[in-house]
Length: 183
Image (tube, rainbow, N blue to C red):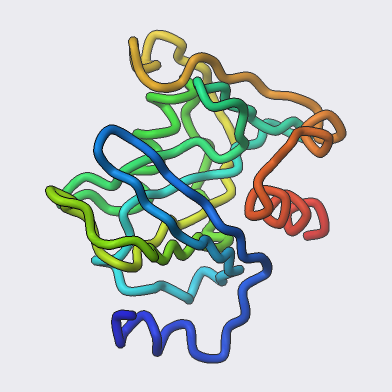
């Protein structure tokens, strides 16, 4: 593990840990994902942050995104080179959901991924550890024409919190939803 990440995680306990297998093309990654709560003053080593995601709300309703693998509640994606995390988040939410963000997204936590399989050929991301920053954001205006055409996402809609709580969420998503509900 990267020494800076080890120092950052020292004294922190994940709220959940889960095993994941990502299969895609010639890449097979066996990994664990740990979910950590963060405060706005906490910021992990920036070069390990590959993606940003948000629990996007509109009042008491929560955004649910549908893709070929199912449904999830954390739209977002890759941070481009030279792009600030919040800038990437606003762009990704617009591309995936068609919604702009009201105000400043609030940092809630992070997913820490640790890859257990050998580094795949042509793998250009941090290895064996990388991070996804997790925000909470309030939707503002809808611009359906801004949604990425032919992207991975098949649809996005706001649903009542009670309905979202009954979805088969990952352990990390469920932990974040519980955290937001309680705070």
